[in-house]
Amino acid sequence: MATDRTLEREYEVPPDETPATTCPYCGRPFRSERYATFHIGVEHAEVCSDDEREAFEEELGDEEYELFTFHFKAAVSVFLVYFLFTFIYALVWSG
Image (cartoon, rainbow, N blue to C red; front, side):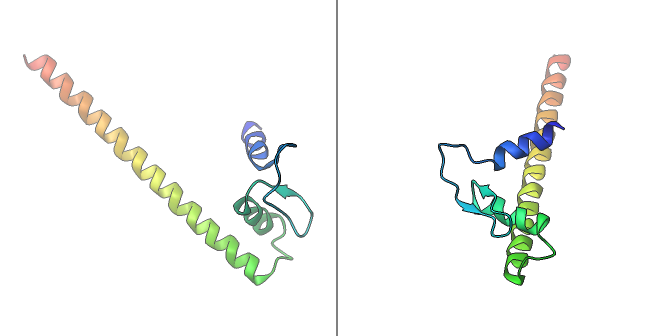
């Protein structure tokens, strides 16, 4: 699946780059702490500590907020573009 490959590329650390952190359970390197936190919360949920679980839930909440904000901005942008084209259409046909 293309989405899985895109996410894998985002998580992978290029050979010329130093990883920000590694997973304490499986040793996988990550480009950022955030990616490692998500990995631990999803892949090692049954063995992670309470602090790691709390960090995962906090990151998940932050990501949900960022996604909501993005969707809100996108919806407002679509509405404004629709309004603009409707207004221009009305101006062109009225005169």
